[in-house]
Length: 574
Image (cartoon, rainbow, N blue to C red; front, side, top):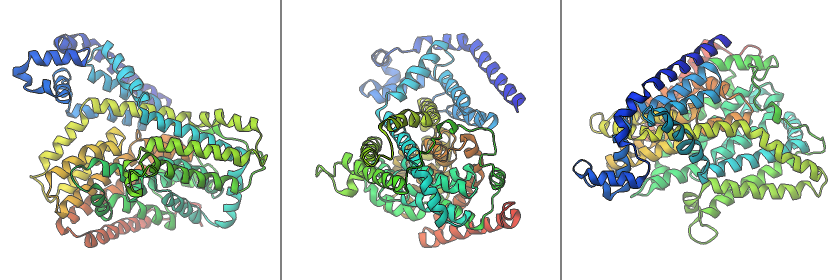
């Protein structure tokens, strides 16, 4: 394995060096169209009116024009190369940080047109610093740190251990542990970030007790995060979808799209069926069989081991349950607060559509932390010193997730700067008339690819939904099916992408090595995606959800039974 890693890194280092050799040649051809500011670009466009037309009257069009003139790879298939490089390297080498950074360098190199100085500037100024100065991203990082502190507090006081002992008395089997994890994930539907970290923290002691691998726990968490949120009318995801569909009733369209969201619904079928039947295939089978022998991780990587907190043994079940319930209530309250509900500016449902999810989670988690302080300290289950120590310990536990998120955001930004969204949007528009009955399946496939490459489902349906709404009849059933296909594809691509923030959160919540999580859940997600693809073709022909949905579920169950007949139960399960 060491030899393979060195060979691959040597190859990419050599490739990078070759690119640098050609940099002066390429840059010379483009030196006249490199701009240092928007004002300089506007002056250039004014001088080139016969080429640019009215671009100077519209800054957005002007910037698009500049990119097309200065970045030859803009809005071409090359825009998808950086994330593909990062993902391929991550799967091959198992080194996620280096792989993501190489992907970022590749994107910056393309964007800078092989100009070394501009590439470095792009990596840090337009990339890392830009993402860290984004208030939404900073809010997510603050939420992560506060949640890490709360998890540290619950562990230190002994609440998690007490809950694990209590749950092990109520839950009698591996099947029950997996279904309980799924059930908790289904209940926490307001936000996927919150879902991943909360379910992982609460259920990890239970799944460890019944020798369920961390990879399987991460899969269950991931499969009940975005897939549950995307079919929940009251969630941050519903709000995001409603917000990007302009000129029509976005919330009504979202509600109508739920029964057609085959990937989300079939993923739920897959998780429940696999838990009941207790069999696995692909890399997950090895992880589960090793877990039954006592090895919950399979590989040597333990990225969260240093974050494990030793309990003082004073805690009770209520010391975990109450902070979690308070956290849920506070986060939901934060969402409706930022959406204007408490100021009389919006109804409860409208407040979800208008909320700032990142800021809401910061408000909610901070308030929950304050309440937890007054719940623990007066009862003397924690000293003030132990409470203060949890701040650094909680932050330390979240460092791996924070690093991966920053790299993933930067890589996603590079992909957008190269025009991957424009490239994909053009494909959708060109496919609309030619393949009408296959359009939902095509939209699903394109949405999967874009979400996989960029690591963002919200960005994917933000790009594609306005196009889908514009090219189809507003009163047609085909519009509903196509919107569902777009949402389902975005969730699927997000689910399987190593650079997706939700996937990273699931790994963090389960305290599982990130690449182990990605590689073990990939076969499961691809099978559901394939069945969903077929189901969208059927739905486009019948255009009746009460016919298409039962057929989709039947096909999914048939595939699961065939896999069960082929692989049988995991070795070691009675």
